[in-house]
Amino acid sequence: MITFQSGGLAAYNSHPYYKNETSYKITAYADYTPPILIIIESKISKYDADTGLSLGQSVYCAYYNSNNGKLESKWINGNLLNPLIAKPSIFIEDIKFKDNITQKEVEIVIKTIYLNKKVALKSLDLELKKVKAHRSFEKDKFIETNHLEFLPPIMTIIGHRFPDEKKKFCEDTGRLKIDFKCKWYNSASKSFSEEFLPYQVLQLVKETSELFGPDILSDLKIVIESNKLIKINVKDKDVFRLEGRDPLIEIASTILEPTDIYFKHYHYIFQSFNYVSQNKQITKLNRVFETKEQGDVFGASYPSYNNGSRKRVIDCHFNEGQYYLIQYKDQFDRITKRIIKVIDLLIYIKNSDEFKIKYKIDESVNSEGVEFANFYYEEADGSISSRVRIMLNDKPTQSFKLREVVEDINLDCFIVANCLLRKGKFRNFKLNNILSATEIIDGNLLFER
Image 1 (tube, rainbow, N blue to C red):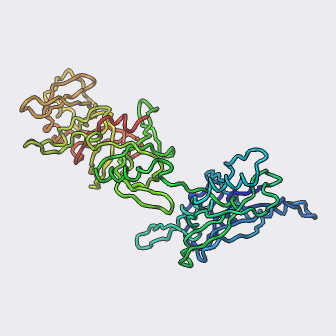
Image 2: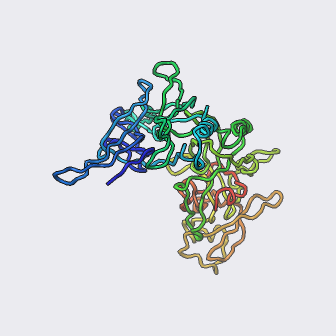
Image 3: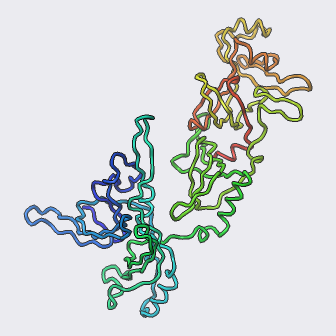
């Protein structure tokens, strides 16, 4: 039998949320979705005299009604509720009173710790993350918006009272019994409201400056204005392993390029571009980030035109084990960007006899039936263009001009790499379909663990 405790969260049984399953998006008529309920108190369950079945606890619940700007409270049978697991938000339970404390001393502690502090209902975060979606038949996809019907406001504690002046502590739990007088701007009445609320329904709201210092917002603004980057650990669910010989290498970090800062009801978030996922990302500003200069992350780019010289993509050596940011056109002419880690360089030989004749491969090198041959770049020497050395059955041949190899219709040159856009899976990239490539400096230190 499910039991409900004071200060916990619950949902009416027609609500899609259950326990820690709170990520579902709501479609159809979202206004039928009931609010998240905060449990103020509960009574012991009674039993049916005929069947012996539990009649369920009587649970006293509260929620914020944004239409009238008031806290609503109802007694509901516990059999009609589902428990919700939310992140802990201990409030007054943190206070440890000394033995034989006087009433005056209790008053001083309460005023010192809580007067003028910001608070909100414990349902705040779950209500803030609610998403409703409606289907666009024209585009055949869902369009999402926030569902903020029961979103509670941020309030300020301006006073307190004891519901029972004679019994300030609960005889069952030993906890202080206290209500806080809260003040907030009431959007329904377009004025300020005040109300005494039991502490069980409240959670503290800390200022960003209280958590990480007053300059964290200014620092992020400077990062955006100076076009710097941020290194950040990804969420555990987004960590993935690289396919290959060392299955223990994980991609656990990414590089973000922040663009905008937003205030979201009670905390700050920022929008950025995630180079690993190649998508925009919203991140909560709740910690100090490691910043990087663009020049410390991105190295040489191809093609490039510097000092009167031209470098093409085929001049990039695509060194084994190194990371590159590439722009790639696939066989359907779709152009995408992604980060890759080079595993190997391969040439696909369509006609091996023709290949031997054209490149004067020694007949003693047995390449019959070989479809792929490894190759690697040789450094350019003076005016000599980039060259490649081809390995047939682990036997090196002479080097050839790279342009000749790339443009040879009998040969297809491929970069074999871990593709971070595809969760580290192996992918083959045709060299002449790579439109641009940028070296990533120390990519293993940036992304791997």
